[in-house]
Length: 83
Image (cartoon, rainbow, N blue to C red; front, side, top):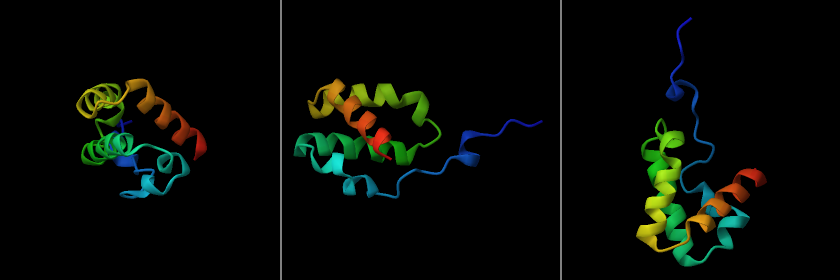
């Protein structure tokens, strides 16, 4: 049996910019929205690497955008739980 690649069955769970319509996103500060937008942009550009690089991406973006890493993680946890 041939192993399937992640790309073969991965479908983005949100359309482009769909995350901006969520209740959780709308509660964020402009600074946090910028950080979240950048994370989604990176996820969209490399969906196959997403799971492997998610933590590093959060860490990098939190430094770049000067937001707390735990706040970004908390946002994504709330988003995933609200779907």
